[in-house]
Image 1: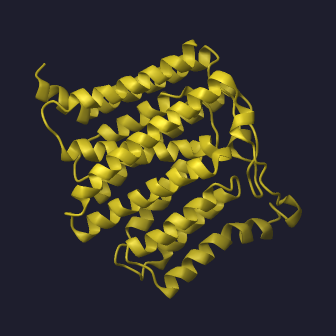
Image 2: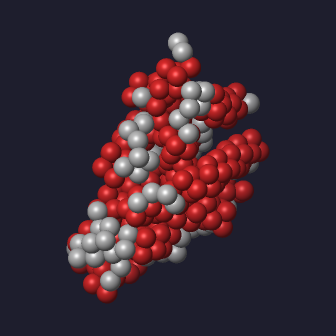
Image 3: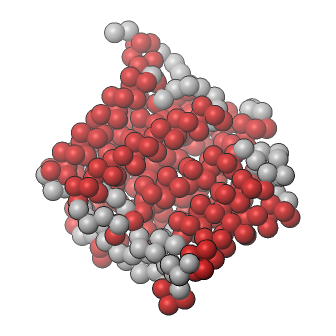
Length: 326
């Protein structure tokens, strides 16, 4: 196979399917070997966190795999609809799955991380359609409603209300009516559930902050810390390189990519600041990092770019092997 053909394969649907298969197979193997570290705790404001929804670990595995695959397809849909990386490359979606599979505990069980990642992506779909359309207040309302609904199960969602409020300026859709729509969207889930008696004032509780340094010890802690550092370096590094090119895009493309930059920066900050929720932020960080990587290799789609792409894959394979063998 020629070098150019290998590079094209990595960007193609066949490369994506291969990465999907590898990540799923690796996660299932880790689950059977008992290397999926159970995540406990409840950080919800009124409803149980996602880790408490399913008791059976096998069912939790299957649901989590389906959720992660759905996220990868949502990333592809977002790119096809809004042309985020200005290419039909599927590299970034496959990269996301490989990054998730590099730490089997993130992909091998249902917990708040992938659920929050899915909700954020679903909220982005109507939000991006408001570009220079401040009259589309219903879509602003829907985006904030989705995030607010998620905040009932985990306070980490509240971080992304800041991202979307900032994104209103990025989308050039900020207005008084839009602000009222956002506030209404935030209030509505709480109001409806309270009205139907699903939640009450007594059901609200302060989040149980579980220090990751207490929850994980030894090898597990070292793996998560190293894994996170690798993701941060890749996300920030490729993001900086991408910004140079993004400035030359039209206003719409700059707005979309600018929003992803904001999402990446805020997530990076809270990975560091809110380390008690480190594991919950990781799937969104992986999404952002995968998009930055995919964008970079789309901009620099040269004959031998398969070498650094495969190099990144090797890094996550090493992280995976570390998690299941030591």
